[in-house]
Length: 411
Image (cartoon, rainbow, N blue to C red; front, side, top):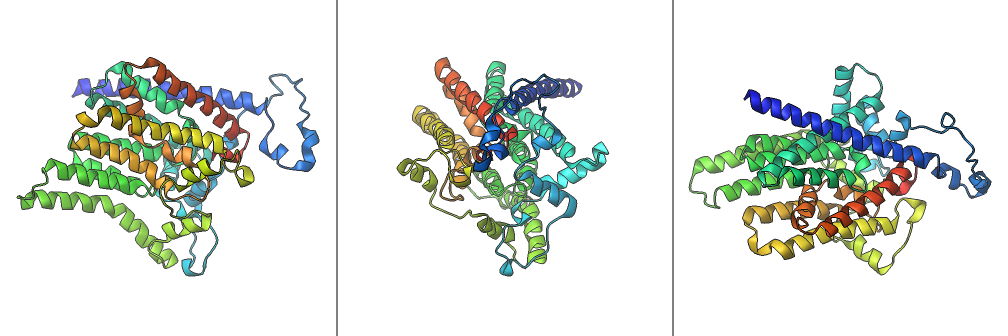
């Protein structure tokens, strides 16, 4: 037991160093971008074009350096607002404006908890620290999951490389829910692999109050448990066990929606409020198909770079297509469930968007099978693997510069 504890501590320390190095690289890229390219606020006013005549004659001391506030953009404010003040009490039947109600509660609750751990009153600092701790824990669970799947150490670190190179990987380290959802998803997959369904149910249930796609984690636990029974329900004990674990997994979301009912008069208020943000349910991949029919570079208000989003989405979809083609004959039922799980985490974002691909790259980044598959089927195809790493890293650089410079398309 002592040996396992020491090994796990050593692994966590290694992952912490890897995360720190990767985040410092992203901050350096952001620093270069902030002092090389114009800020979004500078160019969005057509009457201020003269300000684009930048004076590059500055010293290092005069250059703009990343501050805590530079990591605090877009939706971050809603999570910090909920952490400080909770949710607004409104009547959903009378409200047509977007509110913070559509932002799920676990991440803001953890930010509030960080106050007591760090003794810091800075919400931004606490959120940044929380997100990066969760990223380290995510990589720990993914490392252990890869071991169970038969990856050697070199391959596991390649998986981590792909995760940290993903074009929007900066969102794992800023005040957003990506690292929390990734952590709980990885824990769900890991504990299911160990047949520890109690822990898996808890992780899946918590993911459901982190982001809406958390219900896919709950469904994954349920179907893996069914497969373990060989779909034979001869034992009342087995059925009772499955029922109990499912109850455990839906308790958090039931409590959350019940509170929303009390607060707004609408049990499903968080889901209904999404419509106020110009998002609606659609046929899966409609926005992707619409882009093929009518390609664009930037969407209205520059909230989406169509070319970048399309390239990222296509590269991810290709992973699943290639994996099925190469491995379909060797996949057992659990592996099919695993693949379906990863694919559903992609289908859901593509079914709940507007007419453009806004936020799609960020929504896809929490589908863990993507990263495992890239390493698995490119084991003997180094050129293709390096092509993915190069593509991800190049677009990651673009996204980081865009984020630090305040461009909307990175959101």
